[in-house]
Length: 268
Image (tube, rainbow, N blue to C red):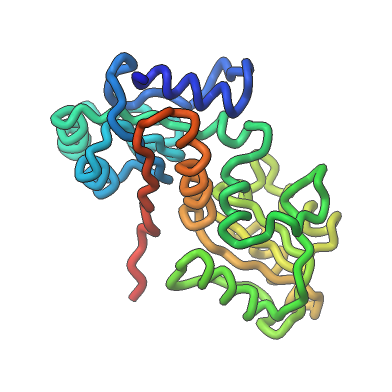
């Protein structure tokens, strides 16, 4: 299979004949007609991920997030940037194709980023409302216990929490990545928390004057509300780990690997 055949296979498996007219799911490096020797799935095609791809003998990366630092992967602004040239040279020298799989991944028959996260934490059967599958019913535990659960399951060194650590929680919402910013409606996460009577919202990214302030005020008033921030990368990486599994039977004998892009921060 060549790069284009792999892409078409992934899109057909995800969305059937449906294709977005405008999408960030583009080939960011390499050529469509290149025969694929191995595929790496990852949250982001960092330089370290590219180097690991080369070491594995693979020549195609499927990344969920941008390669070149903006949501649309625009490169015009990078034409004189030495970092861009160094990264591009590394890719060109090793004939690495990078394809971004973002929009169609979230729009698949089931959101495959959530599929991977739920598999990683074992909540596949905890969905509270199948019509809105971002809410879950779990065995009651404290907010501190729930935070430690996510730290352990998702290999997180530091986790941010808002609310009374001793509060009890059993109804939990999860908004991965930038979903906790509201997806164009800042009030959406607060409405979801209110309408589903959620005790805790687990977030990818936050804006401190929206959901963070809402939960903080609720906690100050003695209401049973909490928030756990796990970060964009830690909330979405597991969808790409899961992808390496479901992709294998679709691409015949092509070796398929997951490479963890890892959380980008060092905590002091």
